[in-house]
Length: 451
Image 1 (cartoon, rainbow, N blue to C red):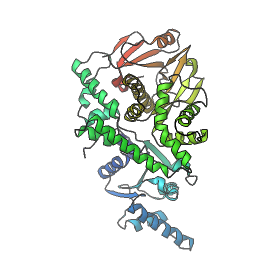
Image 2 (image 1 turned 135 degrees about the vertical axis):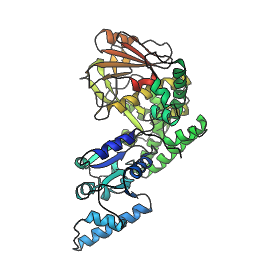
Image 3 (image 1 turned 90 degrees about the horizontal axis):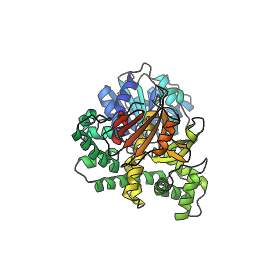
Image 4 (image 1 turned 180 degrees about the vertical axis):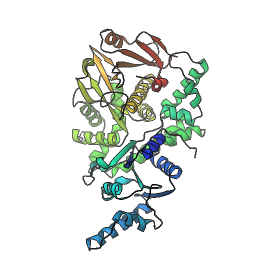
């Protein structure tokens, strides 16, 4: 399998190099490449590795030893270091030291082991990485949060830059000038590759399928399989069939909301809008609570993300979770097509989703941008696609995602009335340029823009 270069690898290195670093919790949605990346990192950066998968035989054996030691301790047996004893029973050649890393995968399968993280960190010299998609943990009260002894890293699907690197086009992106001074061939090449990425997204298996000669249609089949696996696995965590039914139908319902409503929602009405769509088209027995549980599930599982709403460009009038986006543009494109959306509408929504994902990455601690989550804003009777503030300079930016020659009347008015310091126009048919406080950039180059 082709080795995909991931930016998260550098974050893993940074974690390892920190003095007295804590146990690392690697999270992310299913199929984003967590297990592969963590094992690659361990193989290249440590002399010894112990890998335990709690969904496989290795995990069953590990838990058996854990229960043996626990039972012996209940009967009075004393161990100088019970956790070291556990690892020695699981792997007799285990050596506790800085050159050893222990990886416990699918940690969501055992609250008992997850709750021992504090003791692993404090009682052993070896490094510890726990990973999993955490399906079930968010609903299981037996899991305790060990924030004081944990560092965290979230892995997402491949960004556009990572996708280009995998396709051997990384040099073209490095040459890109987002303000129009680059080579024509570079703009055209990146435009073409963005067209592919906006349809297939960044799930590693999907990207590899395309790079191996697969078509966009074949990539969608791969996406469909990922969705099926995720849905089937999720089913066992719902307490009743109504919850599962709501969950299964929310994918298309979210896509319909994205098409139907571009103004955002008032407080508490987002789930109500979804509930109305789901109950109208699937089952009148579904209540708001079921829809809310399914939404929280998708969010916690890394499938969807939320955007906030800023009323009249006032940062004090912030409402969280006012809009929803998919956490992969391939998923967005897939479900918009599933509901029969027009291609022109798909392009606009996917472009906006693409910018949302870039802003969300920049908002992660210690991020570049203010606000708890990416946010859109209202001004007068109009709406601004995104509104953000630089933590470094303190300057505010309106970001408009435009197709063709569409204007940005509301954004220009907000700029003229001092509601923002700069306007960024992210467009699909431009080489970029600067006119006063207005920056125009090709949408695929949004990550190169410095706020």
